[in-house]
Image 1: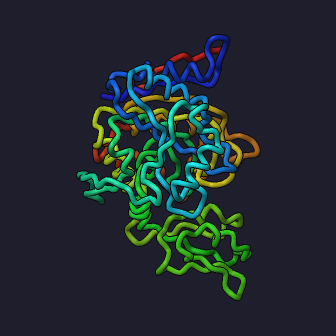
Image 2: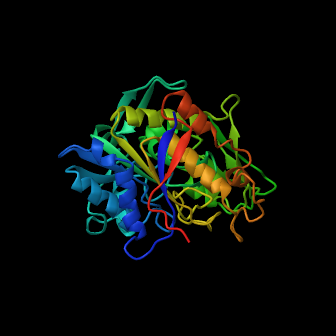
Amino acid sequence: MSSKVCYTNMRTKSGLSLVDKVGLLFDAAGFSRFLGKDELVAIKLHVGEPGNLAYIQPPLVRKVVDKVKAAGARPFITDANTLYVGRRSNAVDHTISALENGFTYATVGAPFIVADGLAGHEHVKVPIDGVRLKEVRIGAAIAQADAMIALSHFKGHEATGFGGAIKNIGMGSASRAGKQEQHSGLRPQVRRERCTGCGRCTRWCPTGALTVGEDGKARIDPERCIGCAECTITCNSRAIRIQWQEGQEGSLQEKMAEYALGVVNTKEGKCGFINFAMNVSPQCDCYAWNDAPIVPNIGILASDDPVAIDAASADLVNQALALPGSAIAHADRHADKLATLYPDVDWAVQLRHGERIGLGKREYTLVNVGVVEG
């Protein structure tokens, strides 16, 4: 039996704004049914690295907050600290970044709470029956919440092919130690012929593993590298590429799905997912910039199944036309847009593994909600 995924397009009209449509999706997906009076509800999202403009806009988040409040529950917006050096690697900078990007109480109607504490060490160890992992470390505020609504900006990703609901809750809910565990099979490699020696990568490396040698080329100390992969996209010359340890291809996506399983296991039957397939940028919102969208704005989806909603989002992106001037402007009309973006990544691993471990189903039924035609 397939999972239901509710969908609305980007078309609006008088009396039916995009914000209104978020409310319709919330109701159609039946999220209110698992929200109890006075329960603490984590609204898991990505507040965006300052300078990036592709993240979910606060007024859309406010609608979800209002719907949670209307159900009698008590919402808070949340995300866990990043592994790499940036403006969201500790709770102080993370909170300031959230405020700068518009996630104030006045705007969204809920407080922002960093899930894994001041320095990323506050987590709950959750046992799971995974293939690669038997225990995962989830940010305490997310693990201890009574219910969760995950709001995910669907986009490309250099290490996982795409980022959607699974990545948002799997990688995004993990403490810093949990993020490092997921990246443990990944090691970047410098292509010397492309390296310009600009040193940009060294400023993003959280462990100092990257340096620029006397020959003007970047070098990676394998003993210090933790495989976070931030350097692979920070490099403007595409001189650093992902190199997987032997037998570890796909391990990042599989561990990510198992972490997602750990999150939903802390609140079984009390999780909802909304994917925003808008401003579908080539890279994650973790960078201080965002490239042009690769396809036109597609719409918004809602489901209680994280695997199904990601499968539907990926299908809709791949069925869309590549936008002129984007990173995949050369793609054929019928091409796999995500594979065109990152040909060395099998983006479906996270879906297959998610289904394998019982996180959700890849088969879905798309239900139109508030779709405006013409």
